[in-house]
Amino acid sequence: MKNLWIVLKFEILNFYKNKSFIIASVIICGLLIIGMSIPTIQSTFFSSSDDSTGEETGSDQTYGFINNAEDNVDSETLEMSFMGGELQEFGDREALDNAVANGDVAAGFVVTSPTEYQHVIQNNEMTGSTHFMFEEAFRETYRRTGFESLGIEYETVEGLVHAPIQRDTVVLGTDSAANYLYTYILVFGLYFIIIVYGQLVATSVASEKSNRAMEVLVTSTKTEHLIFGKVFGGAIAGASQMALIIATAMLAYRANSSAWDGQLDFVFDIPLSVLGSFAVFGILGYLFFLFLFGALGALVSRTEDVSTSVTPITIIFVAVFAISVMGMQNTEGMLLKVASFIPFSSFMAMFVRVSMGSVSNMEVAISLGILLATTLFTGWLASKIYRMGTLMYGNPVKVRTVLKMLFNSNDV
Image 1 (cartoon, helix red, strand yellow):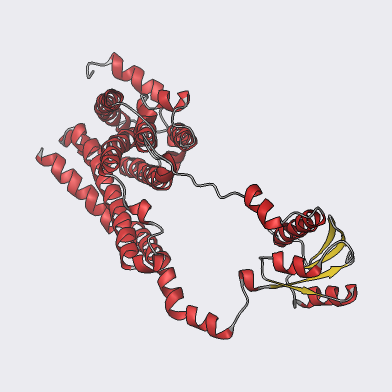
Image 2: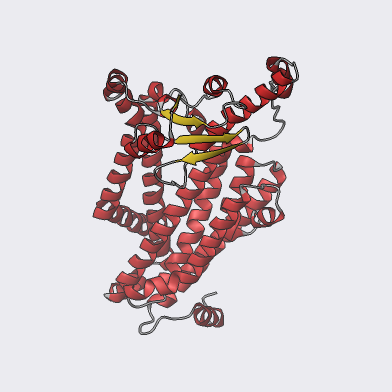
């Protein structure tokens, strides 16, 4: 146990002293602080200046129109019905085109009949939506004129056609829509640290093997202490970095909560049951993949070969992430349910089901038991592969070859 502690302490300090670890943590936390402070900065330095200069934004913009169907379209009714800003009438087409070209009006409209018009703009943007506001006013003008010709009050008809409908949603199970954002953030965070720290653990093993230091380590201490120390060291470093990022985001948001007006409260007010399931499944899945990355790193003799060696497990992990994210759209889908019991994917899939779906305690217990047993077995197997792989040099060794040698030996 003393040797395990020595290896663990050494690996943790290596991570914490790593410049990449420090710089990445500082940059991410700094960006979170800046991002959470944007509403406060805007309200402090820009709100008053915008009001005093009288800049036109959004619904304060001016639009122009020409009414070439005056006998059938009432200009005053059209102007009154337009809710997207000020609608200004022009006398001729040339004046309207010049106003649009010079930016005096945001867009122009030429009415040719009660149901037809031309949309005049300077540039046709992909996200342009100015015509939608005019069409709504144009449609209402047409309705008013038609009902008035029939002697019917338009306000009476409008109350029937556009009757206000109120909805009160009663959630008997889990509110998946409300939980979607923070579930995605946690899943993506777990994906990020496993990819990053898995590569780091594999590279660390390969680099020690390349300078022959592993020969001394393997013969002087148990391989279980070495692989478990490396994996636990990477796990603690990754978990502490993620905890630092989450804590920074929460503190920065709390400090600027008044400026945000509570808009992100649902992201940071995560239920304890969800956090608990994320912690348990996330830690086990994290250790499970780090053991795999560490074992694969021992099968190569050069750090340049690490990426090739870990590619298969990386592809599997990316597929697991894709299944979990897609499963967030339908937590009752068969694919997600099956994935929640497979060790390679259960740590993500079951968390998604707990957070956004309906799952029984029995299912959670079975999935957790399978994942725990598989993680322990993977750790034991990784230590055996680690011992055998680190004593092999030359070309990268295939996993199948090592397993065959391992089960033919007396170490199993």
